[in-house]
Structure formats: C-alpha cells, structure tokens
Amino acid sequence: MRLSQRLTQVPPYLFAQLDARKAAVVARGVDVIPLGIGDPDLSTPEPIIAEMRQAVGDPSNHRYPDYKGSLSFRQAAARYMLRRFGVTVDPERELLGLIGAKEGLAHLVWALVDPGDVTLCPDPGYPVYAVHTAFCGGFAYRMPLRAEHGFLPELSRIPTEIVERAKILFLNYPNNPTTAVADLEFFEEAVDFCRRYGIVLCHDNAYAEITYDGYHAPSVLEVQGAKDVAIEFHSLSKPFNMTGWRIGFACGNADAIEALGTVKNNTDSGPFTAVQVAAERALTQSEALVASQVSVYRRRRDRMVEALRAAGIAVQPPRGTIYLWCPVPEGETSEGFAGRLLEEAGVFVTPGTGYGQEGEGFFRISLTCSDDRLEEAARRIAALGSGG
Image (cartoon, rainbow, N blue to C red; front, top):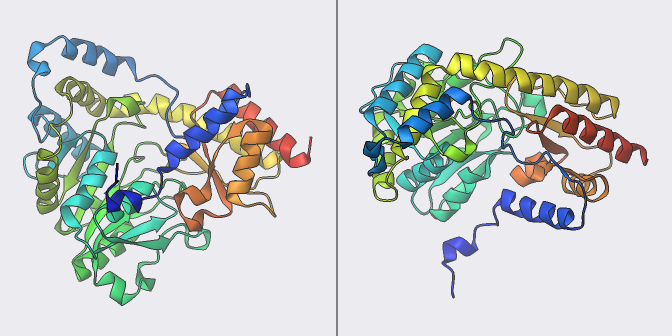
C-alpha cells in the first residue's frame, strides 16, 4: 500500500508514541506512574451521568443528530458564554457543536488553509495546530513561547512576509503545555493584530474553568470587536472529566463558524444527541460541578510543587490547567531526562520537545493521578536526582 504524500510528511502523533514507550516498560513488569497525558482520573460528576442515563433511553436521541448540534445544546452553550464571560453569541449563527474541541480545531484548518498558506502556531504548543496545517499543504510558522515573555508570543516580531501569508493565529490560554495565562490586554493586542492583517484568531480555551488563586481565565470574545476576527473553542473534557464523551463547541465569528460547519457537514454527523443532553446539564451547572474538580487539582498542584521543589526542581505553581511545566535538572535534555525517569524511576512524563523545539529544557507533569501516586512520583524523582 502506498500512503498519500501528505501522510508521509506528518510525524507520528506524540501521545501515540509516548503510549507505546510506556507500554514497553510496563510489559517488563515495572510499576509505572502515568503523569504524561492529561486524561482526568476522576469520574464524570454524577448529575451529568444521571442525565446521560435518561437521555440514552429516549429513542428520539438514537437518530442522526443535528449537524450543527441540537438547538437546545447550542442555547445552553450560549447561556454559559453569557453567564461565565459576559459574551453574547447567537446560537444559530455564531455557535457550533463539536465532537470534542480537537476535531473542531483540525477541521477549522481544513476550512481555511490552502497549499502555501501560513498558520501561526505556538511553540511549544498542542501538536494538532501544526499537524493539520501540514495535512493541508500549509506552513506552520512556530511562534516561540519563552519564560522571559510570560510564555506569550511576541506578535510584533513575526516577519512581515510571514504575517502577510498567514490565515490563522492559534492561541491557547490557559496554555498547554506551559500552563501560562493571558489577560485581556494581550487578547486586545492579538485581536488588533489579526484585524490589521486579515487573520482569523483561533483561541483554544479548553482550560478556561481550571484556574487557581483567584484567577479567572477570560474569553478572547470579551474584547470589543473580537467577533470580527475571532473564533473560540471550548471543551467539556477537562473541567467535567468527560474526555471520552467527545463533546465541545466553537463560537464567535459567523463566517468562520459557517466555514467550519461546511467541513463538518461533509465529514461527520455531529455529536450523539444523548451526550449533548448530558452536556447541557454540565454547562447549566458549571460553577457547582467544576468547583469540586478544581479543588482536587489545586491540592495536587500544591503538594506536587512542594515535593518537586524539595527535590531540587524549581517549578512554579501554575494559575491554570491540570499540568506542571517543570525545568529539567542542569545538564539534562528534555527527552533524556524524561527517558531516565521512565526507565530508571518508573515515572512517565512528557518531554517538552514533544510540543516543539522551544520546549527543550522542560518536561510536563499531568496532575491526573491520585495524591498518593503523585507523591510517590515526587519521591522517585528526588531519588533519581540524588542517585539513590
């Protein structure tokens, strides 16, 4: 079988590679603590499960779903945007149901990018942005995210010849993997930048609800006039422990929503209606349901930061996401240290270079294990660092 040229140009998916490496170590009988992938270990809240049980039993939900997402789901998402961010979106023209945000992000690239076009992608950043740019024959320009600039891209430093070819600017705050956060002042700069150059601003807001220490993540759509250029993606995966349910939504610029919907109409049949019914409950009760999840992650964050600092790793406590972005010990590389952790300590983390070359010098820990397993991981990391 001969593969398509586009497929041969795309590197293997990061997390598939990591899973294979972990599986090989587990097969040797090693007790591996999995801190690599952000898949919540906590159960989906019971009110959502109860809603799903009832919805699955309704035969009307067994038919093909609405391609755009059911009207009631889109209305619930619109009410959530208004309540949470003070943003008004039209559920008919400015909102679209998704089979998870990942699917929508990928399909947006297919809707907007032609061969030779440029997308502006964060480095380090979620691999889907750049990979689907390559699928479409485009060029992913890597915007460095560096600690000295708060892990925010310096938009003014992007070469003019790149900007003039750019179709999409990808942003993601709270950020995966760096855990950085952004304020409205930065989003105002980004909206002005995209309006000036005719670029679609795509904000991946998957971690908006998982924030700490009094910080509340904004929506880019809070910026005046943002809907002229911006589309924002929301996922129920992380805040409601619904990664396997595959449900999310996009909202914002009506033309971008229509273009994304056209790709989806010709590709999938929309999220299972029963899942949308359950998701309505999640969005309607978001404050109460998310609070308990965030309290768990806050406790884990604090304990893990303390333990890692005691082990000599100068990690900063994040104000958002379910991750820690940790510097590797002096003299180590990201992949080398992550490999040693797995092979010698049985701790599975993600090397920063898995998200781009600017991730060198860091590794990412996911706080999606029980407290005792996280603390055991910290002890193993400390023992490895001391040679014990």
